Image 1 (cartoon, rainbow, N blue to C red):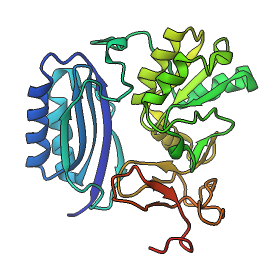
Image 2 (tube, rainbow, N blue to C red; image 1 turned 90 degrees about the vertical axis):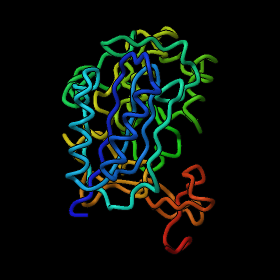
Image 3 (cartoon, rainbow, N blue to C red; image 1 turned 45 degrees about the vertical axis):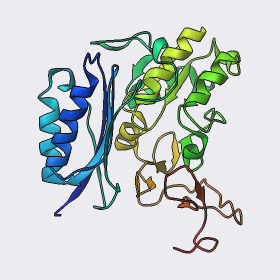
Length: 282
């Protein structure tokens, strides 16, 4: 393998035959020797795959040949070559499992009723205009935010994406309903749905960070409002936007600062915990 790369992208678009898309995506990715995870649903596609840069480019070109996916915002990053154990391509009711497929409406223009997308520069402009009134709302699971988040962000105590729906429906964040809220997540896909659910709940001014933390990091690195490292769902565990990111995580063993995730169970990514090299040697 010459240069390993990983691509992350999603597209919300009505897919009348998700199984046909699954078969095509499996053939396209596997024929290029890629590994990773692809989820297809009636709402669209969500994919993170990696492999040799030339193979990944062929896969991206092939994916974009399908008209609904032609405008996919593909985010590239450096891989290691062993970032995923295998290729998984599945059909599910949702491309992100909030557990409420019937509450999410998707047209050719994307999710209906979602928040207003803001570029990283537009987010800064909003903060410059509205100051401390702006609330950043983390749309990821709490353990992801342990190593990186926006300064002063609300980080919900959730273990799964389904927990957001439970907490929103219970009114946990209703005190923010008249506040300018900027939702954010890794690449943007979770916020597309989360912002729509928040608006459905009665939140009056909801924005979403377009392109997610990935695009923000590409634009501002560690010189903006972001602090720490970005958790990713592959063997890299975390990526940084500068050579010397802030370390805001703490070791679950000794409490010392660390951004190092270790899987103490069976490698399924659900038992990750922060451990420093002294408490959990490599």
